Image (tube, rainbow, N blue to C red; front, top):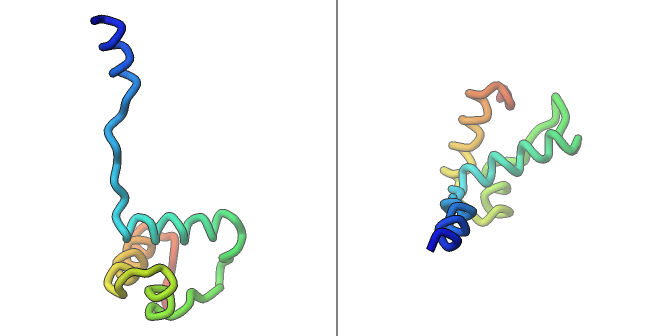
Length: 75
C-alpha cells in the first residue's frame, strides 16, 4: 500500500488553461522570441480572434491584462 501512495504523490492536479491565458502566453512567447518588439503593432482584434479561433472578447481581455502587467501598451 505504501508504494501505491508514494506513486500517487507524483501526480499533480491538471490545470486547464483559459483562452485568455493561452493568448497571453502566445503574445509573451512572441515577445521573448524576438518576433514582437517594442513599437510593433499587434494585428487588429478581429484578425487575431479569427486566427486564434476565439471571440474578440477573449482577445480584448488578454490585451487588457498584458497592459495591466506593463507588457503591452496601447496607443
